[in-house]
Image (cartoon, rainbow, N blue to C red):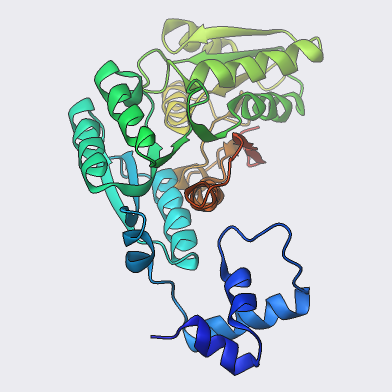
Length: 329
């Protein structure tokens, strides 16, 4: 196994310099030139240096592992998130323990195991579980014993460090994209049956209406039922209605409903979805939507958590979604 001593000997520099360069949370007062830093990093990579996390964290009576709790949902967003988490963990030489789940019992099992194992850090993507009193107690126990916790995609969680998507900004971007082609009115389609309805859709709607108000455009919220069908029937190319569906699968339902009436998105009405799932670019006409940098979120989450494990205090962070312009808007 390659050691710091091997890297120092290869470069003819001191072990202390190599250690400062490779420290995940370097001393802010350490003065190391960028040229030396680059040489150390290149040499460490070339020689195949990897940190011995097991030995390092044994001294702290902790397990050198990051636990990851993610929704047990097979979609592109979760896949991209995991790709980002895995890529950054590999770069930082931190083993992962992935636990997919959805229910409170699954989350409770995850937390109990990591409390017992004294894992160094946890990345938790959960929209509700940690608000449960029993799970909240487990989180307090885990963090009270020195574990570090980072929450993904829940800005309502005030006790712990969070990394999330800026859903309000995403809604505003959807409104901006619709407004690029004038419509006789604009509608935010709310779907109370969505599992994200209680958390994500209201913030996306908030951003949508804030933008429309700022431009003095006529906008309202409608339900995904008879009201939507009525507006689809009335929408014509000369005076289209613009719809913002809070997620892509709802947008797909709207496209299907419209198709049954002989209406085509982009021609007879305007439509923007949210998520940029693969189906959005595969259909014809292509669905205009809002993309989310989930891979980047996963990488940032690991980066911040590792800094926390080594003593850094990290701030909450919002990642900005982006517009994906296709034919429907």
